[in-house]
Amino acid sequence: MHIGDLDLGDRPLFLAPMEDITDPSFRYLCKKFEADVMYTEFISSDGLIRDGAKSLKKLDIFDYERPMGIQLYGHIVESMVEATHRAVAAKPEIIDINYGCPVRKIANRGAGAGMLANIPLMMEMTKAIVEASPIPVTVKTRLGWDNESKIIVEVAEQLQDLGIRALTIHGRTRAQMYKGTADWTLIGEVKNNPRMHIPIIGNGDITNPAEAREAFDRYGVDGIMIGRAAVGKPWLFKHIKHHLTTGELLPEPTVSEKVDMARMQFEKSLEFKEGAVGIYEMRRHFSNYFKGLPHFKEMRLKLLTSLDVDEIFGLLEQIREKYGSDRPEVSGGFWDR
Image (cartoon, rainbow, N blue to C red; front, side, top):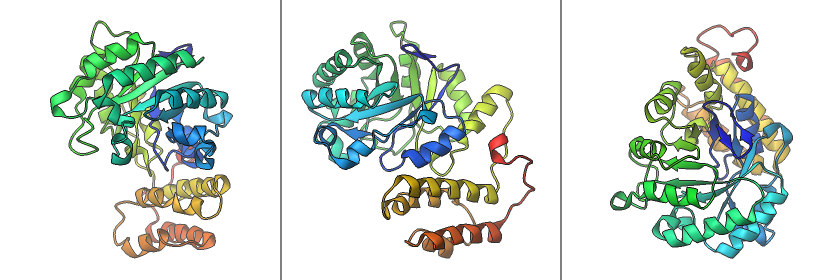
């Protein structure tokens, strides 16, 4: 699969851009587990052109993460074009336009998935950004605004004709938010449309290697983007790749190995974030790393409320000691599987 001159190999896996989640600490783990393409957290065009500190910080890219994309959202064409110039200066490999975020405060302003209610503006904005960017521009969007307006087949053709180099489709409408089941049949319809020649990346409800294989085999997508399913499970990328290559399923990491991953991500979070932000933004990850452990409520509460770094590291070691492993460690550890 190629995005412009960028060769991503066969059946690449993408880490979706997610606010307060796909920060450098999480990306560090996902890259170690072989995510092919990653994105910064999505960035408000208004925040970026106003030199907002939080928006500017999101532009940080490290060489070991490449290839990297920066995803922008907004509802004003001129602001998005200016933000594109600033994002390009950060030297990513891809500029991605967010036409898919369903969150009310974004969509109701006409940004993100709100663009699905104003297709002429979507096309005007896309054309302007493609013309402004010297690097490949891609788009992420949804099937449509609601069940009565699943217009993705037509929209995909129009976006392609404006010069985008790849299209990611989340298999839900804006009205669905993240509820219900992703509809991959329409993603497959876009991919198999004889008019389409750019890569199509499918997104939605890929939570394990078997589902990834079915998405590639049944719907013919060029790549898969994984979002929420990777939170607390950064090893998912490597497990999918192993299954696609060998047909085998790797065992889930032991509790001790999950502690190692959580510790590593927490260390990186403290390194990249100022003050208590590195603690606050790890809490969702901690909760997912250890989801399903029996009788975990009390320890989970401590882990998600403590503001003491040493105490948090101590709690992680207590989890290791209490829950240990139900099978022996594999020689070389989880990185080498």
